Picture (cartoon, rainbow, N blue to C red):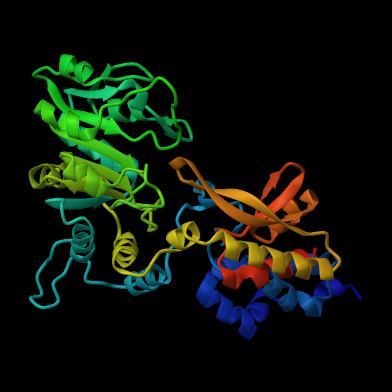
Length: 425
């Protein structure tokens, strides 16, 4: 008898309670695809006809997205390829709250339309009280592009040559700004720019002076740059792109610019990212003079760059909530990391795996604090384990012929998961 005739019908397999439940979470198309694939396997004789439902269940993903949560053991706190800042529990809870219908633009007391994202904007304003007004768009580059479009389309922006940076994946700041219709007037040289260079470049067609923090590189030696407080004396608005989203001075990163200091130094507008040192979702932060923020807010491009309710919810929870995972990682003490690495390495050796706790250096990443090195500890393993561990969503780094699992960015509660993944390989 041809066993292919015993392969159950699609509707019969889909009636399996496990697949019925999966359909409510993953959708009928995805579940049906898994069933069809299992049926084909049965027809080829790879599995028994009665195993079709079990095979379909086993093939189903755990969620309806192809994005996979990973354990970041690279030692790069804000790893762009891994999504930069992980969200706090408070921000994740806020995402759940905002997933359905919300009062994002509605006043429950009056029944009338309300200012969009008012809670988030209030939280940002409270975090930087020296800013007269604030606004949020969908990323840091968008914040700067909106400022250039609203204030300088068809006019000049004066900027130092040493600050015309490439921001990643081939996107260059000059090209971004020129795409807005603004014209750049470059001053100074790569390594030295003086106040007089800006003064000579100013004319009646100049819209603003731009200062950009070169966050992903550092120039040393015979260098000079003009601080914001001196640029502010030239009588034109100064727009400062601080990049990494630090809102207030931080002793751990003394050379990293922050929004509060820039505003107090005379910046008319400050732009920054929300998913870097702030530790929140991807967003572009705009802070500064009320009249300029309002011009940006009312510009037609602002509608195209606005953030959704999920970003607003996660950003507000980040601003109001507890210390973010980013700052927990940045502040982990090397002694504690050494203890964890030693304990994990010992457990792995007991399992017959060559492992060693080694001192190493972590970095901030995400284009922030390029010269800051954070003493850290890692578990050193055979580099051949790098690929199989990536298949289990654990990402380390191969360095000097060893796979290092740097624990700075790994929450302590995940040490057992790391052990289990390595021990099974």
